[in-house]
Image 1 (cartoon, one colour):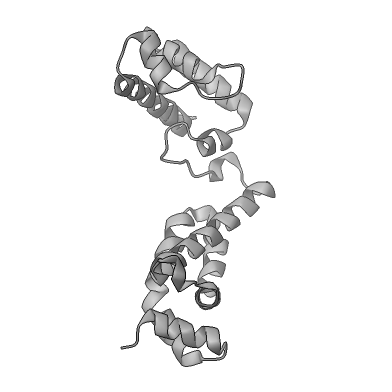
Image 2: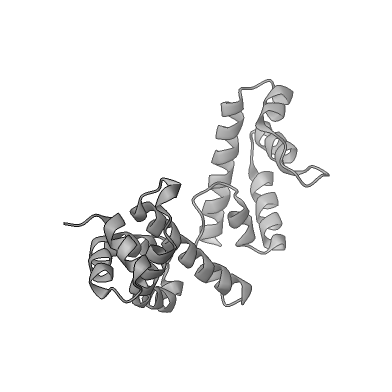
Length: 191
């Protein structure tokens, strides 16, 4: 069995080497499909996912042609990144063209990431945060959220400064913050 690098060199030397391309596609289709399924699994992306699957051979071919073995990366890793960027470009095109409704937005697993807030329009997000924050009985939650996000320079306050101000550990502040964000996410699911 020939190595990936040998197959890739053949493809780079002769763009019509279908045997080498076929062998590369057979070996790495699983990686490509797993990335497409990971990023385009939401039902809203069904059409895009099927189109991305149809373009599998083309993406693997382009990845082989542009692969640089001198960068100390395995081809499988390189291909996974190419597939990931293809999926993210599809997602970004949908977002830019405003084809998504609020019901179609898949929520991120990251607490309070840019994508989490970006998926709600700002007024809804602030209203939801405020109402959930007003229900909160632990005064530390309000202080942590206020210190972390209500700054004039539009930057997040470092956890170290928040922890010092509240005389708590950094991890304790992060835990309280994440519990609150999870409550907000649950509220979103019920809205």
